[in-house]
Amino acid sequence: GAVVSQHPSWVICKSGTSVKIECRSLDFQATTMFWYRQFPKQSLMLMATSNEGSKATYEQGVEKDKFLINHASLTLSTLTVTSAHPEDSSFYICSARDQVTPNTGELFFGEGSRLTVL
Amino acid sequence: AQSVTQLDSQVPVFEEAPVELRCNYSSSVSVYLFWYVQYPNQGLQLLLKYLSGSTLVKGINGFEAEFNKSQTSFHLRKPSVHISDTAEYFCAVSTASGGYNKLIFGAGTRLAVHP
Image (cartoon, rainbow over all chains, first blue to last red; front, side, top):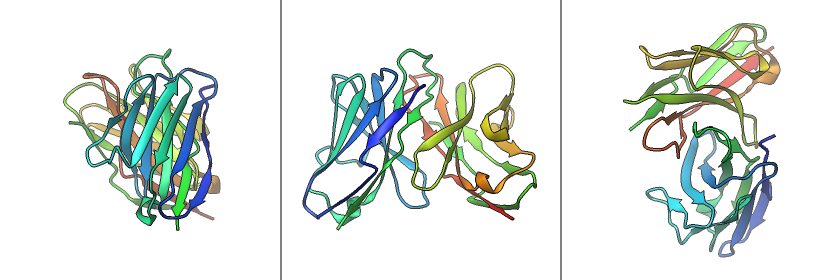
């Protein structure tokens, strides 16, 4: 149980275009999802917290107009990188908390999405 | 605010040798502690977690960790590693007050197992 799926796994796009990454909880409902960014050989950096039916909460330094997050249902959150540039190339990982289990902070992670902007 | 320090960025070890990956945290309140493993180009997989109770926690793939409150540590150990254990390992903490909305990750330790 507790499977989180991300799509696409890999995406290459031209500079200036927008890219959407989907994060789905397959066998549980997630009122809260989190989006992380990971640079090569570095740790995960929390970008934003996505709450179902409300606006996302962005971490300091993360441009909310650049990284649009939508959490329209209990099983789906999307991250849209708008007007992507080469510096947005990175590995993006989503995670979700099962709303049923105790609130210990434990998260279930997606497989990640590697974005390359040419 | 809580933070996590993984003291070793890289740990090389020979196959079948024991290994310890160190993790220290700072927090003024009760914490929950986690170890995750990441294989190349993949997401994170939970190895083990400490929520409460016994301070020695056993996880998947033969790993275990011990919560030491006085030393604020949560070191990960395995008595005999395999080549397949080569991966990046992340220690993480979430606090038990003010909500559990965030997992704070350490910088990661790359375990490289050599034949």
